[in-house]
Figure 1 (cartoon, rainbow, N blue to C red):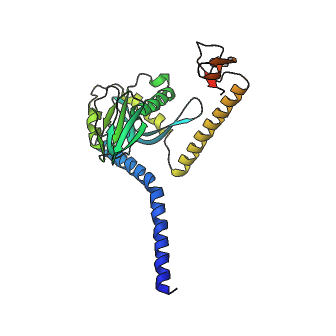
Figure 2: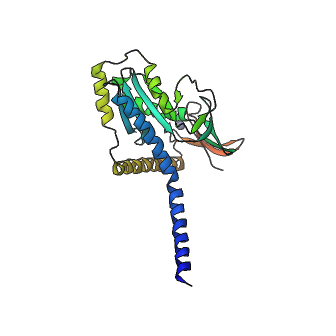
Figure 3: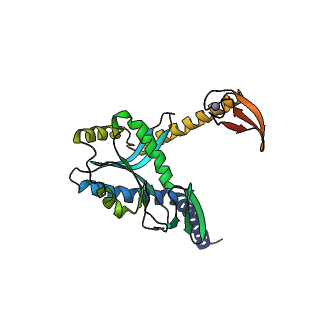
Length: 264
Ligand SMILES: [Zn+2]
């Protein structure tokens, strides 16, 4: 084997490794790019609003069950809070406001993904709970942002959410002209939001780890309860029943509690 041939092989091998690494990082990069793009837009809106808007990025809202809800961006204004969910899909996007899944069509391939409006609804619910009584009167608006490489093909005029591209964000904010909150409340809201900001990668990793652990512990508890014939939902007694589709454990508090678990 001569040296030239050897180096060619080595080079090919290294290129293959590099290609594999790029592929493994691709989704992460595209994801970060989307985040970056929307973050840039919101920062610009904030900077040119002379104090009217304040943007928060990457927030982890604690939930009652110990898990967390991650929110990409929140813009605080005199009109309330705008909760922004960023989507980095490309291709054609089809979706209805209330359907569970939306569709992405790319190169004749169809992929389903969770309806981002419903996803954001979950975030907003968590945010509402966490904000509590004190801020119960604050309007919260739902905004889903797609990057321009996605083409939204359905009618995008929804009743309970905005589905827009980054350059339309400013327009969305301007649509709510009434001043719903006073200066002092706005300040207190800002202070509260500051407490759940993720500062760096390390902190983000820890929060995510805790989130996964909480969900696992919860699953284990649920399994234990079912084994002991205790309803994980209401604490009632579970009774073995035979139904059309096989044997299952059902809650004795039915129809008040509808918990069931099939046991084959
Ligand atoms: Zn029950």
